[in-house]
Length: 618
Image (cartoon, rainbow, N blue to C red):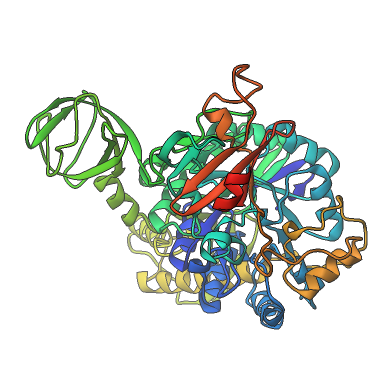
């Protein structure tokens, strides 16, 4: 969330949390906020969490002034509204900072005073739409992944609401919230948290005459997003919340990627006095972060700097991992790679065979420059190697635990009847413990002072790291180590309570407004699946909307709208190639067929449901 401290803008690194383990890992590795799934109604149905776990995560996050956002971002049916409203009240009571929603019906509920964020599923790609959401009362808006820097800046120019943007992770090929392909092909709705990922399947491409142009390739599968090199550009364009995708990823991914972007943002903040972190504590990373080592289909900046050609993962939807180098020699049971490639026993290696099919193996052993492995019969000289499992790196990630500490200054002084130990943390909060003791002059003053200092520095299993320790004693006195440790532990408990009690979340009731919706769309793309959502749009001037695709699926419906263009990717764009013909194309996967239509003015591709009879008559 954007926070203003004078002219200083606080930046938020927002990390995913599949479960409690991932959430704690995200906080410990530098996240300013985490987003996680509620027990129900999240856009990743497989990543729901109990209220108990969410409460535990929230309390831990708040110790660092970090936030917890809970996704309730599926479409709701009428019979689910009461349960969803009750759940939101429960989340508010356990301290959650905000809910992330897609269904506009939620805004018509009797909500507690909790911040409400507009999910990327609400299709936030125009200045008018984001301005509408801001005026409606949303506290943060997640922008569409497809936006360029200029488009983000245009949105910022007419809005003040904090803007959130994905900077890393898997990409949906369709505009979020506007994909109905999974529902159409499998009955599993992406807008209901059950996407079957048809975009990761292989497809064949045909022209209208039935000629096969491309056979059995992953034409809708995109590379992964990485905006590492454009964080400062995004800040200048108006982004304040930097989101990492991955609510289905494990803790090693979260540790690695969160640490990477923590380092990148900190470098930017250190060079600009107008920027600040939005949470407390410093992270010590015991490994060298490298996002490609935990999951990578190859990386793209997508449309951030305009249209790029090579944004798809054409040959496989799976993780290739870290690009290593080429094979120079092949034998029956070993191979030799280019110099400079460090391979280890247990590493997982993959490559594309001569037919461009993904193959892989585990390394059994390495002897000098020879790498021994089973099942390398399809490996060939010149093959590019990738490492999708780094055995040593994975061990480093697994062993990386509580790395985040809040700086404190300690002051031990005498009182009339004993001692006082005061703690002041990096946020200016202070706590004090006084203890009556017999003040016995030390027989060995130097040793006594050293013992006191050593014991006061032992905060290893806490969230604190002493920055300074002052001893203000009239004379060196002997204090048993057990007494010092007891005072230190009591001070730790007292200050934990102080930090939790001092935390203030944003609280306000969601307003009821009636300003007009910014366009005249009334079809199923509004995703109206309950009477409260219908009420919302009616209030905002949209009458008689069509029901959501999940309720009524029209024949020949538009299943996707995407900026990814197969014509452009295959050098068949009429704007780029004068010899290209501007005809529609046919996409096939098994028994399913789809027609590709192209809006060249908007530079968008649309995918329509199509049966065999329609193909013949097209």
